[in-house]
Image (cartoon, rainbow, N blue to C red):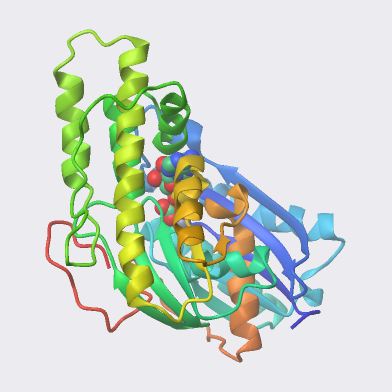
Length: 349
Ligand code: KG4
Ligand code: ZN
């Protein structure tokens, strides 16, 4: 494992990313190109534009990463590509690229679940993190608590019954005129705000394990609409109120999962929303109050990147779990296929 070398390709949303990672956790080279300019004027990711941008960028990016590391495909032990879940056009571009490289170089293909990439990324950052751990996976499309028992062994303890928390950040930022991408913009605005607005905290204190963010998002919309000409301070105050409510929802549900998964050796957060400092701080405090170590990967590793896909590939390679060239692109691909579907609109696996 320590000398194995895997090329990772990520293209499931609006980041085109490639990385070359060694089993000893060395990132030999990587590139991440975001497409913010392409989607900004639409206020959200346009799938067709995203797929085209991935198609334009991926091949030269693979060349650059290999050249920077002074390697060729012959030096690589496997090619790992995101095979889902995500925007299907982008997933197909990345997976077909990974298949073509694997075929041309006669190397094994590893079709990686993007969520597994996020779920295992904390082990790339922290060599001491052992299974089982409790993972809060928070991104633009997902909000889940998972018991991570091993590579390929995930127990879903909770999911959202409506929106993902990242989606709530993005939509609230849009309503507040904070621009795209919304999560980081809302976090910046919240820093100078006073959380003076009373906003709901859906499902907090509930006996059921799941998350809900739709009511919080709508409350931001109503509160904004009630101020005809908001000042910059009003917007910052609304952002701070949203941020605090979102934090409260995440920590309350996570506290419940800590009780439901007592075998956890650590509390771990991953996914794009894990880049949020207020959320990291609140989860760190929660872990400390339960005497659990808290692990949060560096911020660049929280948002989409190729290194987490390469790392998931390395973990799968070490477990002898590789794919053949028929591996399908999967727009939906739950980490725990046994988990029941939850009620609510826009059910997220
Ligand atoms: O994991 P990711 O890069 O892509 C998905 O797999 O969805 O997550 C993107 C999400 C977006 O909703 C983005 O607004 C959110 O992560 N995000 C943040 C922050 N940085 C990214 N949310 C809150 N605070 C941040 N600093
Ligand atoms: Zn992601």
